[in-house]
Image 1 (tube, one colour):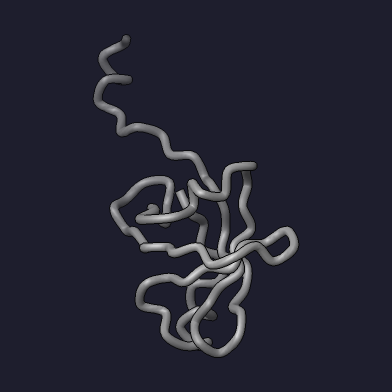
Image 2 (cartoon, rainbow, N blue to C red):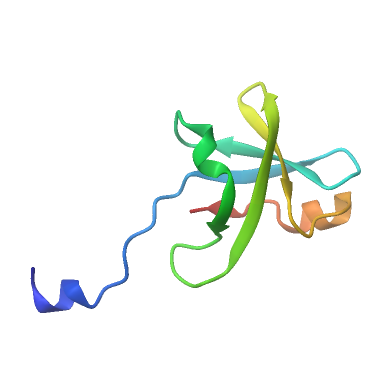
Length: 88
C-alpha cells in the first residue's frame, strides 16, 4: 500500500437518503440505495467525511421507501430540516 493511501480515512458508502417527512410526529421516508435495508438502522454518518451522525430506527416499508424515526426529530418541522440528508 502506498504511503498516501495509509493516511486516508476509510471511504464511506452511501446507503440511502432522507427524501421526505411523513406525518406530524417527526417520521421520515428514506430511499434505500441497496437491497439490505437493515444497514440503515443505528448510528449513521451524514456526510462522506466528517463526524456528524444521526441515530436511525427503522419502522416499516412504505412502497419503495422505508419509514424511520431519527433521534431528535420530534415533529414535522424537524424532519423537514433534514430532508435531503445522505446516510453513510
